[in-house]
Image 1 (cartoon, rainbow, N blue to C red):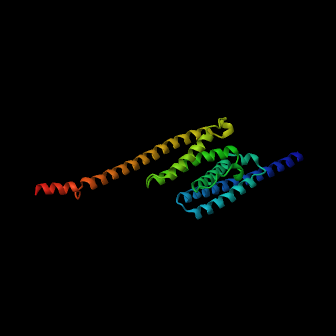
Image 2: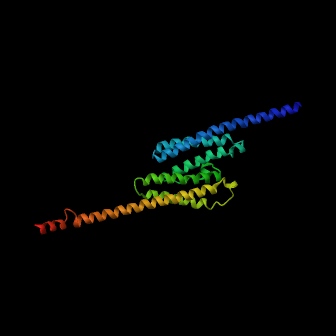
Image 3: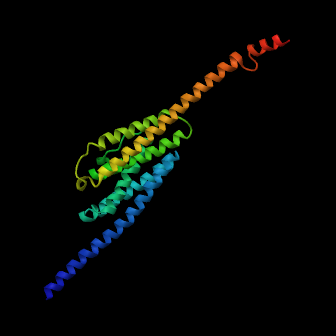
Length: 227
């Protein structure tokens, strides 16, 4: 029985270490998610300085999260850990694409393949948000650029036809991305047609004013006949 007590002490020490690693990972995951959210908020507000600060904090937390779980594979691949790292992918890629920077890859962010792809899928929603902010002020070629990026992301996601156990539910995220893209395409088309209509009406108004408006030659001719 003395040996049993030694075994129990060894197990307790292991459990204590795993519990401490888990608690630390949970705290870091929450902080990482918050900084990622703030980075995305900053880029939508064109606050580049704030965006860079938040991304730097998120990068440090992601590195710390990975290193802290280096000896605990089960905790590293747990849902809360990969969800936080997915948010890191989403924030990093969203900020890069909106600012016109090169696309960061999974190796650069040290992200698992399925985590990277799921983060990439959620970028589509943030690009739609950016498009709608742009379209509030009228049609813009920038909205077309973002729509093209959304299409490019979807064209890759749709080719990842693997079981959900491998991709962590990527198929559902891909379906959502497709719906978002179609809505955005409709919004941009509506905005473009509205701009074309405004231009056409403006041209007609100029023609009417120049040829037969209140101060044009037709009114003068009518006045002359009445006299």
